[in-house]
Image (tube, rainbow over all chains, first blue to last red; front, top):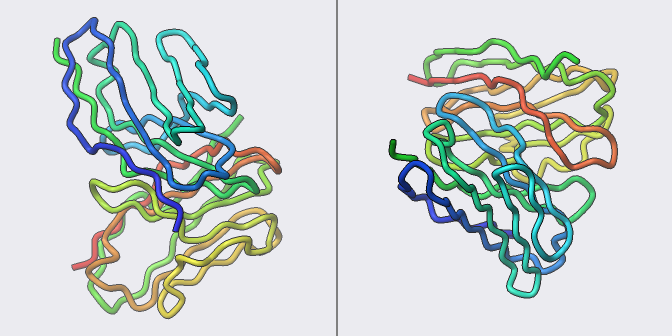
Length: 110
Length: 113
């Protein structure tokens, strides 16, 4: 059973701070890694994906991947109250088979 | 580009009744997924279609759940008979062939009393 683990939170950060969200996965053969944001009562929407070790930046978001440690993270710089949501980590072993974590709830305090 | 459409948005039924959900994916998306998301949990894959063929239904409770995707476009998910523990949001998602980014519909919120 492939597992994707996240701390459920809530993770509380003050406005303007960096929020760091973490995810570990069990399948060493995993190839693709995704971060989805889910607002309360809404459906998930893709924020970023990463395939290679290292960092990938998109605006205020940075995804970090370390395949040796089976660890992927999402950094949100200059956190805003509108970033308050649940962040889902998703991992694929190929062939479009994606496993989602349980999500980390982020609260950005004004 | 129109998004993934789902209906109904909300449904309340009594246990042992049956219910059906409908999904129309984004045009051109050959892969269609049905997920169950219980409050406070991540989406759990129920079934994955590639065109009108089933790729993965290993977590689908086949004694009560069924799904079909006739003609490889829209899809229906049925629960018969429903149990209290089926109360959840049922999400439909779709993606292009060979791509793994999924686009989600608004979901159907099911309450079983």
